[in-house]
Image (tube, rainbow, N blue to C red; front, top):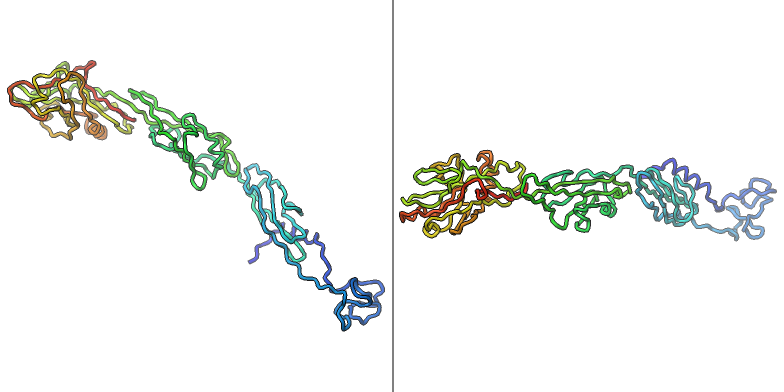
Length: 445
């Protein structure tokens, strides 16, 4: 199927044909003065003039005598020219256009022309291109012509950043997050990476990778992002800033407008949760309850071989709803007094049990524990004692609405009593001062 020829190409072909010097190939001879009649070169009309190149007195042509014309030369057919290559450099220009080198390799042509340029010689020419266009190069000789086309595109679209991860001004970004930038079109990778600037994540401390299309850049920091440390919910988060200067370009050379992006990482906070005194105290197996500030929390047995258990309740209502995770939670209380030998005779260490209760009463004493949180104290030394209650606090936070935004624990020895008719107990301080029980939460809100 033939390719339609444009008007411009037809015009060029006509110009090229007019420029070709055609060489005579025999046939009808030009008329000469003195010919008596139309010369058919048949040897029968007087006044014939020998043609140039004929032997003496011998004419050429179909009507020559029985012997061949000694001066005739048989010419071989001329092969059409061949355009081996036709290229444009660059083939893609920015919105403003620019200079392009058209270059070719042609064999066997007498004349070469390019649409929009005209007749050319040599093997290349520089042209100014302001908008996308197609150039046609045609090589011509007596045997025919050959044409090749090359396209030069002008990209008039300015590149933009279509998405950024983390999203601009994001908060609570995790430490292992990569920065992913998506551009509206393929970018010049080298110039775009060179345009990246950040004092928080220097390019020397990051790895850059691209998707195959050159539209998505992933920046992987060599080290995890850092968190702001603090002991208050007012602690300000760490802000990271990155930017791309206006030297970033798409593959055509259009420049990206300077772009600044920022986000904040999680905070690493250590928060002290206050106790709820109305739910703190102790209960014995007879249903006796004591929950008064200034009265120690008893854990152990009585002279009547009864059993006492201690209770601690902490307010977690001030934790932000956006809390990402509870990294660690520990319940603290100060061991003030040890009466008798509870650690030796009641089974060893005091255990912290995760419980829920709405009132400090006999039901709280005997209710089933949700779980054993861990050992609270295993010796009689005076001072701060603690239990790791991380899993319990995580659960309480997740169910804070149904659990009254409280985290509650029951403290008890493994054995209810040693039946020695003597008091063996531990007393924990329970007053709102420097030795007040508290819940310490390390978190990343």
